Length: 115
Image: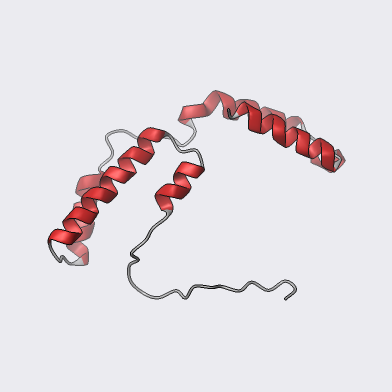
């Protein structure tokens, strides 16, 4: 196969019955309050979608209504001190001089800071 990528899905116009965005956000470490709010919005949209068939404009209008943020969240607010430590650690590291073992140890050190 070499350097080829084989897509096992076909893209088509329109919506999808499944979305994994919230799951990806959770795995990426987004704050639990943000994940909870996203799930609330999704639940409300799904309920409204089942009750009536509405046009795209109406859905967009309702989405704005539902998702109007209570406050602006930064993806880095929850762990800003930790991210600063990691940023500093990475800036001090010369990746061109690391052995594979040193790179794995450095990665483990970063991972431990996230716990």
